[in-house]
Amino acid sequence: MIEIKNLKKTFEGGTEALRGVDLKVNKGEFLSILGPSGSGKTTLLRSINGLENIDSGEIFFDSEKINKIYLPEVQKKTGMIFQEFNLVNNLSAINNVLTGLLNSSSKFLSMFYLFTKDQKLEALKALETVGLLDKAYNRADELSGGQRQRVGIARAIIKKPSLLLADEPVASLDPKAADLIMSLLKKINKEFKITIMCNLHQTELAAQYSDRIIGLLDGAIMFDKLASNINRTSINQIYK
Image (tube, rainbow, N blue to C red):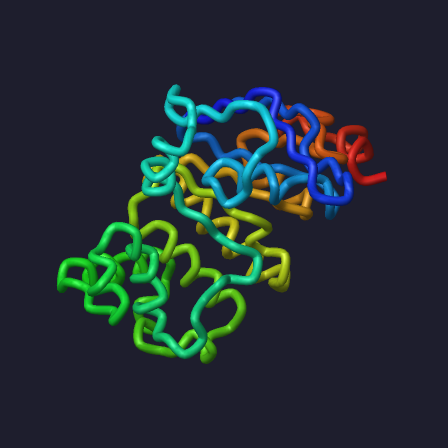
């Protein structure tokens, strides 16, 4: 599904965000990435869908190298979930979900949110999947944090991606809402066979919901293990 070879990224000022990362992610896998703030987790995810330019290295998506020509196709097949939800507050939940189709619809029509009946039905189906069908016409700023993140998930899955990138999706949520979001992501992973790469700080959630966990520290992978094999020694490698 995803193969990353010797990925490097240095930001202005000399901060090495990624230092020769090598990683393979299998189709249908739920992979969690643990690491402290500044470890390179976000840069790694954003490098895959072109939101971050890399300095050197290679990324392969379904065995094809990602380049400027192939990137738009990769972006069509990839959904992104953000820590701060990235919703438009004065839009309804359904219109926020429909923004997930902006790249696949007529740019002129999407500017005015003139989506087809079928697209609106798909948006309602996505909201039903995340348990928010009854909130379809509520404004985003009327929803709780957990509900807003579920709208963000619905927006990501409406385009039927084969890969879902979740950048600390539960960082700003209380434990109950965080568990709900993670169980929902696991459901999507299993039922829709969507590969998930998820950045997390919560080691317990990573162990509970992931198939595999990698530990990232200062832009380098410190461990790569099955979730069932994670122990305190592993965690201490990245959270000192």
